[in-house]
Length: 61
Image (cartoon, rainbow, N blue to C red):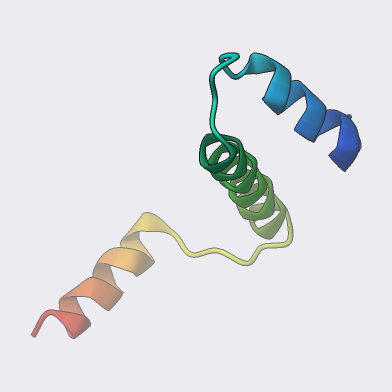
């Protein structure tokens, strides 16, 4: 598994040469959110699809 610095460098290397600072920051943040989501799932900090649908039903009444 890559450390954070290696992961960011690989993200930057995959972007086109004309990527803007905003493009780079967006992609880094997007990837960070994916990693955080996976970590939350591993820690059991998630709900099932059925639980989500039940919550939506209550909210949309």
